[in-house]
Length: 600
Image 1 (cartoon, rainbow, N blue to C red):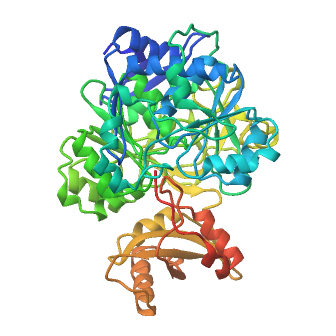
Image 2: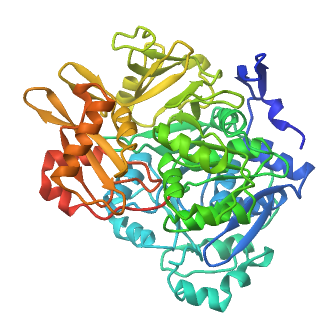
Image 3: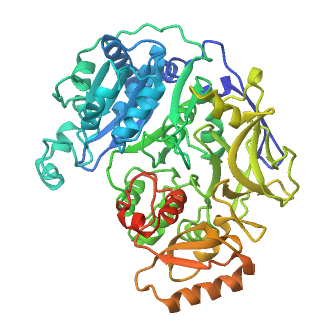
């Protein structure tokens, strides 16, 4: 390891060993693909970069030398397909290794990477392609997303190139036998190893075959001129209402993730493997599977699965000797509720979580199981991690930690004044357009009105609320829309959920506000019960009595609803906005909600 991250940072640590000051710098022509991945490949071509596997048994061990080779070939292939600098390219590749080839290739070309989830439907795709002016789509043949693209063609005139990847994984690829038969036939073993990379071709009218094209492409690629200020990646935000916004980042965004990987995830550069459980369609994937980890010269694990299975994923920790693990709290809870006694988890050295608030009971449960304290963190699609329990810190239960020193992060009230300790306000980050903090978005692309709402008066306004204690630790309250305003009080759904989860009957829960003529809003709890418990009026009364004893009287849930599953994103984040929308539309809409989607 050559510590190339030190080329880009200035760091100062306190007497307690915790990061005290942190700044990032780079040259005007900085490009992550050339200056990090290719640099490592030139000096240490055999350094492990990624372990990739799937449920069928296919397995690949990619070095940095491999990533340079395949990204160069991919860049040549994409240029042949008409992709050029500045083009907007929508990439829907689940957890296929081809995502890494493609992302690095687009960075080398200077085209803009737009990752997206495979769960998009026609109206989603129409909006994204037209809003961003997408000229090329690179997508998987696993599932029905290619058909969704074809169905949308009449309404997306900017699209010039359609490129299809034979994913060959997840047990869903059309034309392959069922998963059990695939294992019996040994297809995974057949495709494993260097000869199996991009070995599966695919034919679809109007589409170019990615795998065959990349295999045939030249491996000779000369560096193209790009700038650190060039647009590099766009993420559509998940949002709580309305159409998704497009968070646009330049090439310095990758450097912002040094805080993510080095000072929060504590990745192990030599001899370790980092595992972030996230689909490449979501921002969390580049948080944990690309930028910061490769800047730290570390190896990542990627598992190309379809449906989340706690037992399956815990088995990977033992199999590949995972040293650092990152996933949402909901997934850690699923691990704890699963057959945990079957696994050693002895290779784990460090665990972090983000994506939703970390309840104290989960913190204690994971520490009891593994001896490891979960280190919570906070960030957004618009940012890297900005608040975290950094390495060396002692976490406080329920706290996200303290601000990463790369950013001037404050809690501001509605008038823009800094909140006092204990006062709830909005998480804001100082923002000077002429000296923008690296990693914070440039703008909401093609949306000056929403950009002006988020970036104003010298601050980036996150839309998330929190409060700070006397030691500078920050405690999450919720999205502005999530905070419940009842009888003049501001109630944090996270606080209520944390207490609810200590009741023996409650497996999962989501707290929202519902309109109430007298109070403005009443607290509602939507609950998934543990096996062995059944919904009843008696149980509701018992839970309410329990809550009255544990919280202030105005906070207890006056309405309790029992469900089989909570609505979640593909990364298993609970979607309170869906519950609120169902309350507005009534029980009929709730009955029509599709089953929960698993994944991450």
